[in-house]
Length: 216
Image (tube, rainbow, N blue to C red):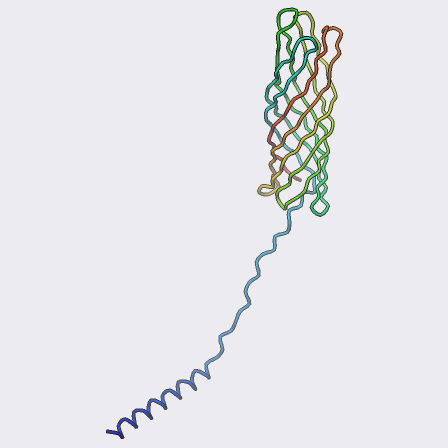
């Protein structure tokens, strides 16, 4: 019996040694290098662009000696501009021209109604932004030009006025050459001392709008 057990143990040892030797002779599995992820260059805002914009406007016009009128309306138009990017700083020049339906009225001290309206508004502005890759908040300001139609029960004027505008917004890079923005502007076209009206009237408004641009 002891001989049988010894023979079995010996045979098991021989088989184990042969298996280890065969395993040592197996080729080492080749390690292939891991593919590096594709490099995505930071978004660059430099370049020329065209776009459209639209939104709403609300404000107040003061009539000397006749109170004030609340104004509101819509705007829609086109945009043109150019950006220069230096590191993360973006400097730009932008212009736009919008059709406007801004209207307002108030009771006249002489009876009847004083009315004011704006049919178009254009701006030429500088922009200063800071690029967080594909997102760019910015401040903006410059020249505002628009017409102001004012009327009383006895007279009316239709003037083109130059004033100023200031505001800010955020622009986002979309797919391909497209970008989108949302912005706020405050525009002031000053006061008209029109003798034909018999009263002075000023014009200032708040503009909230969105835009879609195509970069070339």
